[in-house]
Amino acid sequence: MTEREIKKGIKELSPIDVYMLLPRTNCKECGEANCMAFAAKVVNREISVEQCPPILEKEHEEAYGKLREMLAPAVKEIIIGTGNHAAKVGGKLVMYRHEFTYHNPTPIAIEVTDEMPEDELLDKARKAEGFSYNYIGREVNLDMVAIRSTSNDPTTFKSAVEKVAKATELPLILCSFSPNVMEAGLVAIKDRNPLIYAATKNNWRDMAELALMYNCPLTVFAPNNLKLLKSLAKTMIEYGVEDLVLDPGTFADEGLSDTINNFTMVRRNACRKGDKLLSFPIIGTPITAWIGEEAPKDMLAWKEAYVASMLMSRYADILIMHSLDGWVQLPTVIWRFNIYTDPRKPVAVESGLRIFGEPDENSPLLLTTNYALTYFTVESDIKSAKLNCYLLVVDTEGISVESAVAGRYLTAEKTADAIKESEIEQKVKHRHLIIPGMAARLSGEIEDLSGWRVLVGPRDSSGIPKFLSEKWPPKEE
Image (cartoon, rainbow, N blue to C red; front, side, top):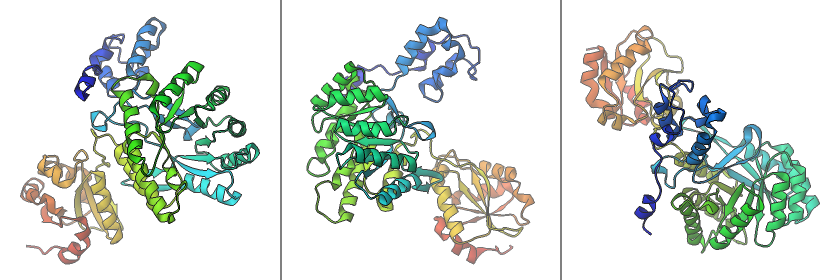
């Protein structure tokens, strides 16, 4: 069956589908102008259907049930952990990011073992929780801790789980194929809603009992065997376990192509064929790059990093990793950030006037757009040079300078309005505006509309310090 034939069998959801099930009273209790506007936002996942108070009334119970079913994602959303640190995994609506957008960024769990010395165990858990990096104005972090039993001893595992639970509030994954070991860990953190890893064809009944007893999500593990994976998922559902995570197996070496293919086929069957037995989050374990290998640590960490990025690109909803090195995790979390940004909405910062250092009435005024990557690059170059200046950030709907000029998102009219709204004329006595080199063609129009003289600055913000040292203050004509 071709991709086109598969798509034809799946009806795309439209606002009218939602509208027809709403009360259609246009009561505006949801905050929207009418029910059709509300339906459009529901379809775009900008608001939830529960924000319509009338649909929650008993007389609309059947319609509400149909809406819930209609709006259910192709991949079920599972919650791991509790409170503010709880992680939502899965919940994907589409197979490809360009079709809509991805929800619930892939949590990255850092692995510790129950045979680690206590100091090392606690230090790694705390470092995982403390990992943070500011990327174009957003904080990127690690999300979970996976506690793996290498001792296969219930007492040892329970002790390690208790220690980690006290050291961090991050959601936990308990890793053991032994039901006895797993139960010891669950007893220690029965109120933390950890993910159980994992049920196999050999231990599925005992693991299912534990999942039901402690009301925890459960991983089903069938390496490189999708038929068995599906069979286990079916068995678990019939047994009463509803919150499942699927592990098709991660092979970091010769089996990597099979791994990617298996992940893709699981997600394809869920999103394109509506296979309910495979409509669950997928877990990837790049940590396998470290198992059974005799190679330099840097090589193993590098392998783990590229496997993690590949799996994230191919639908992994959770990752378990070993390395905490910044050069391993930074590319991974930044790649995650980029994958999970909404492709329909450029990443933007707030427009307006920014002040750097201690500028006075003679300090320069520069201009840039509100595209986040552009803004933070300019900000970094200004701060690195310790400049005292003003920066006017124009709202271009999150578009970079060159594209904004070409697409008429950055115009002389917008610039003149931004100058006026910023009230910069009350802060400086000169009337000189420095614009990016890529916006040079706007200089004449800006001068005509704003009354300010325009200086065309460097094409790259790294040249701002040199430009100012040579051209500021400007010579009066």
